[in-house]
Image (cartoon, rainbow, N blue to C red; front, side, top):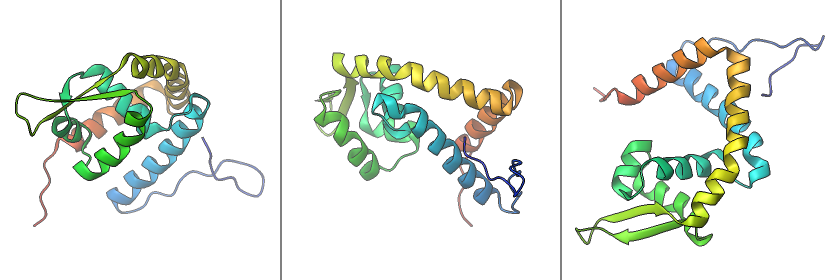
Length: 154
């Protein structure tokens, strides 16, 4: 992972900002850049890998449920899925309700997911080594908890 260094080449710790959102967004950017770099040899970025991973675990999921699972708005999800469809990695079928679109990986999509898995595992291992296993588990628990909280302005 890229980190700031002082004039002597020593790693500088990130500054603790007073805003939780700012700290979370900064961490997101740093971790995403790291995963993108680690996944680059597979030809995927972190967002594409996340979609392949989610579809591998939840096959035949509706696009609406996938958007909810990943907390992505429908328009962004549609735009992000487009390259996967174009490469033939994704199958879309109409559900029981004609308005519902059910998504699954094709055999090629499953192969691409498996091909990228070692790069993702290396990223996971690197982050765990940088932060420590316990801190990673706490971080995941906190992120899942934060995603599960239904915050409403006002």
